[in-house]
Image (tube, rainbow, N blue to C red):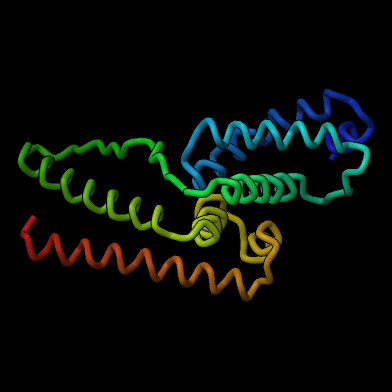
Length: 187
């Protein structure tokens, strides 16, 4: 990638291009791991400061995107481990749905069901350990395959499968309980 070579040569334009190409994606990825806008923005800023600072010693990479996601993942993990207590601030955007049914009552019932399921899924995701949350984010939201995900997280592929399986199992339990509760209560 030309921008990577520009960065390694000390050309600020290379860094600027990499930032403009990947910063939004890095922000979205970071927010999925720790939904705290200022925390994630700081981590991304520190990541790019380090890229510039250590540009002379950067390794060559075939996939800048994977390299940056791995660096951000490491930075987030490092910053979280510094905190004595993890507090999820819940800055995940509110759930919105557009209903086209004619009945107001039907819209309210559907909205309540969707809101309950969304809340349960959100709570389920927030209760997952950070590594399981990262695996879910990378596999299902960032569309990475298991090999790329294992590379980003610095684990072997079998561990990646295990983390994903455990996370999905936990999320399924949360959703099934909610569906059962909705059926019992008649909502």
